[in-house]
Picture (cartoon, rainbow, N blue to C red):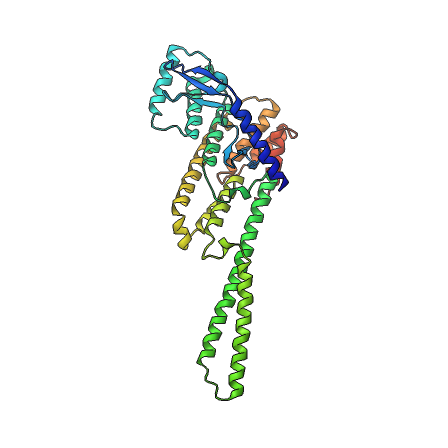
Length: 367
């Protein structure tokens, strides 16, 4: 498709630009070590956008990544994580001691991207008001940690789901669900026909016609059964290969992942439960990894929501109030709770802002 070629060209240009970016030396305030800090990578929206603002970018080589996840930097020796704009700041001896103790407790978290964002959030919480980072911004850090978990999931066929708007995401998921159910209905109908044909052949085999006319009639019926069987097999062959097996497990997994992206945990869990049989056993490891990722994401969304709710207790500019309220609604909805009150607040605060418009789409959605 033309749009895919355009996205591919843009991705190549962006990657080339990122590769030409210069690196600068940055000092770790905890131990004085120096690391090379590359410039932020450019990104595109080729993989679509989720209702909570998570943008999926596609690189020139076709790999996916979550955009906007390079504004926090982790120092590998100490594990300290800071926003880019704070890399040059100075800390008091008391703050340094507090940060060292915090990082000692978090030393077992590893260096996953989600851990980096959680660490940054906890660093700013430990520093308090002196850090100059408000509760809404801390909520953003936890939300991005949730995005990092979402981006760590690799699903075959994911390129077929690239919604660019909230409404498109819900519509596209419904289309995928309806398409699969229709294919399954057709498959079940064809399989029932083939089963009936086998039974009919069994009945014919037990017959013992005596006259030439009877034997001819049996052969004519057998020929008719063969013609029906060929037509049924042709219809079955027209179905996608993954539907023709005992259980289209890969499709179920893809639908679960798509439901997670649009924030429908009920649909997500319903599709995962359908992964069974021989193919389900083969995908057991992948399904377990998916469930673990979904659980981790929900936990991070809950932490983000706590800080968004706290931020809304303060006086905020109208557009920021709408943004934070909409994101609070998303952290609730994506965990199976009611986010409509938060969306309504976003609409009241600034209906024409980005947060207000997104909240309106989410309130109007059918899922």
